[in-house]
Image 1 (cartoon, rainbow, N blue to C red):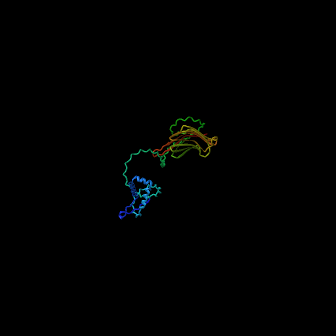
Image 2 (image 1 turned 180 degrees about the horizontal axis):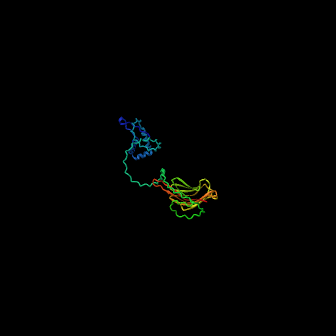
Image 3 (image 1 turned 90 degrees about the vertical axis):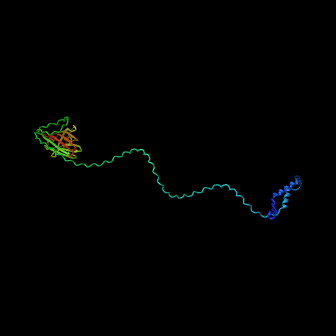
Length: 326
């Protein structure tokens, strides 16, 4: 588009700048004054008014005036749209822990809680170990033994009959004093005592044979053993039978057909925790070579408990007769 050069401002003595709009307006005014018919005739037969106008404008152009002052800065435009969110940065290193703060003041004591339910009873503990056994007290003094009765006179030896079968044992009565020996018989009487854990022996010789009793006390049980032996050490045969303190009958035998000759023959052994008594009949000898004897003996065994300063002891007695066989 052609540019109409301004002629200068009124301030510097020039003419006012003519714009393209002013020129068009002037031409339009002129055409209106000339009439619509004339404009139509001109337009139909003559040159184009637009061309005339352009020619006129070019014929009247003046030189370009000086550059005007810089216009004022336009208003700041609006902010553009927010850009996309950038990628998340890497996690930074953990910071150093802060110093421990001071201890706060102690809170007030809480209220006392309710009592809990009673717990179940615990299992019974194991029994304690058995304490050591106390020291055994000293043994008391032994009591005085009773005096032996006098030995009866030896009577004439009578004929010995065969031993009969023992009859039934009656109830045991109290131990009596030894009776006098009959004619031809030797009275036998043995009496001994034994303390706890002790064994004592006493004997009597009848026609070369030793008739002995052995008395023992073990705890509260008193025991008696009646034994026959030869003083010269020769062997012999023997047999015995009787009734024990338990009322039980017994019999023993030792000869060439049953055990052979012996140096010592045990007639019986008996025991009791209180009072016991029994009897025995026996015969001993080696027929034709060694003199023989036979006898009938009663016995008693008594366990005496401790009584104050008197210690417990066993009291054993044997009494009866023995006869030398013819």
